Length: 369
Image 1 (spheres, helix red, strand yellow):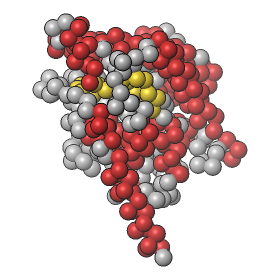
Image 2 (tube, rainbow, N blue to C red):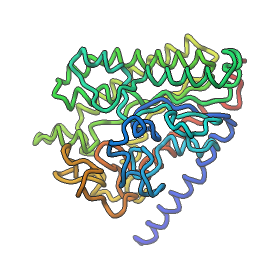
Image 3 (tube, rainbow, N blue to C red):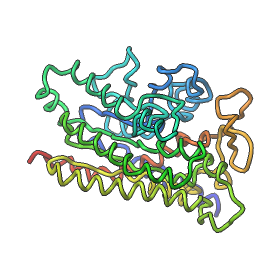
Image 4 (cartoon, one colour):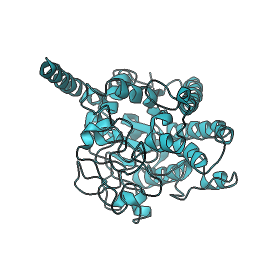
């Protein structure tokens, strides 16, 4: 009986993949453009700083068998989005040998929505990169200026492109949380972060974007990094998934305000299709169905690549450092390094998101009509 159930779960899993793999192809996108942070960086940070851990194994071991700058053991959600749309994996903008005919990835691991200088004035330091959302938009502008002869040509060409503005903003909160700032100090950043994302969406619309996806934040209270740093003996602080409730409520507040900003943008730009990508719901769906999808439920909140503590995470001995072990089967674990997810987790989240987003993109309609 157990074997039959396992077989049904496997068949269910492959049915999901088969049903969703081509969902975005009906849109016939010519190109895909990505702004964001480590959840979507395909190699910009390691070109800024080749010494970062993401530039060496075990990062990339599962799919590429070498590091590419992706903060996972393999593919990211943007890779699955590209595959679904029939577009090649996006080269990072800083790859001077990259092919950019079908899109560009401007995302940088560690990037923030707010400029580093703005955060520094608040006593918040970004030690990873200076490439905030505003700098990525500058790269995008430079790319379009050298690719197209006029704003009119750019706007016309981009009508058949898909833009991903985020996920971005998570690091604006991660840094103050992990640098000893109070909950209130982190929460005070939220209006500025949301405005920065809203301004970025407005800017890409100005280039000619007609379809834009704006992802929300993950439930940060479920991540091993947060569970380790903010661990408590107060059992009432945890929800049924053993996630920290107050941190997840923080993420939900960000997502609520972001969705309000998207509604405002829809009113301002009625001919543009703006879609909210619910990363929070996708992650919770993943937790709800972890066993069915082949994840080891005893390891759901433990990092695959890491060491120490209840969650296999040590801020001083991170994945990629010498002698930090890697689990034998990353496909059975949700979290890769305590902060980022495994390829398999990203794959399942992408399936959920593509299924949710595809109809909302209204690809059978002309957004200019």
